[in-house]
Image 1 (cartoon, rainbow, N blue to C red):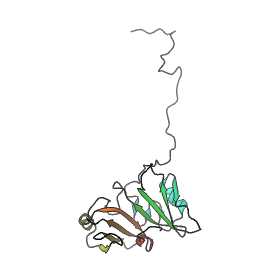
Image 2: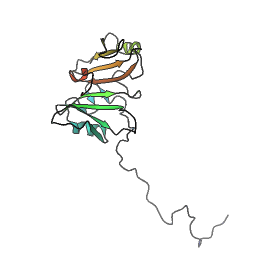
Image 3: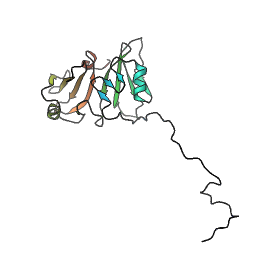
Image 4: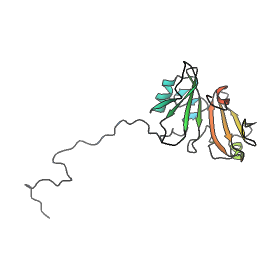
Amino acid sequence: MATDPAAPPPFDQPAGDVPPATAADVPAAPGAMPAEGAIDFAGFGPAAFGADAEQVRMAWGGDLQAMPEPDEPGACHYLMPAMAQGEGYRIAFMIEGDRFVRIDVRDREIGAPGGGRAGMDAAQIEALYPGRVETRPHKYVDDASYLRIADGAGGGGVLVFETDAAGRVGEWRVGLPPQVDYVEGCS
């Protein structure tokens, strides 16, 4: 099929040369997830426990909002990614005394150091951290517990899995004592 060189180009084709497309710099979306292994007993990626809030924001790579907004310098608060309407948090970074001290996670997709996750049962946690799990009773829920695991490498970080009465992990946190043991977060 011959084409007429004098005919205008088709509407779906540019008339001239077009430079190649380039990706825009886009901050982490509200549903963004940390890379596997980014959370460990020492902190989050390059932001070690003890870092300031700006270092946590840089490690996350996207927008983190202070919740609640601290009412005085050094007050306990969380940095959280923007949440979808009606959702609770998936990951939150606790700041107290102007320092990064803890990470809270409710999302089943985000793995804890050593492989534990929300949604696992206590037996699965025991199997992942053999001989290292200290079980403590839950402060508010009968038959629920906190499964506390110290850093096996001897660092100061502690991992805590919070189970319901059926023994299923609903959320976990990792951080420094005493903040990692605050059962009510910043409340």
